[in-house]
Amino acid sequence: MFDCSSSAASTSSFSSFHHRRATAAGRAARQADDAVLAARIRAVHRESDGTYSVPRITAEFREAGERVNHKRIARVMRASIWPACGCGADTAPPSRTRPG
Image 1 (cartoon, helix red, strand yellow):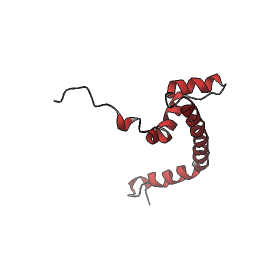
Image 2 (cartoon, one colour; image 1 turned 45 degrees about the vertical axis):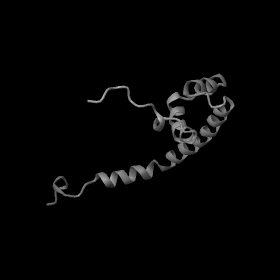
Image 3 (cartoon, helix red, strand yellow; image 1 turned 90 degrees about the vertical axis):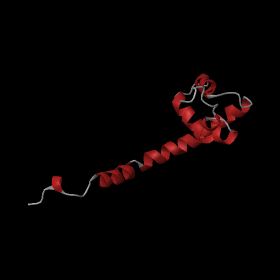
């Protein structure tokens, strides 16, 4: 008799494949929505001469009557705007802690 629990084959890669396949449409829709949001964020960022960051851009969207989470705005800005303008995690000031 064959016992599945003692088999050396893993089912995790099988289930991962099917999960990725089942969620591909939702992922593509989210990426398209993020691209539209990035264009709108760029417009607000440009209108403010590059001074508006996540909190102010979130406030702008909320004043316009749109519900957008500040974490989503931060994620989209990290991916599309901040690398282009040279701000963000790559240009953070050095740590203020003393070495060792």
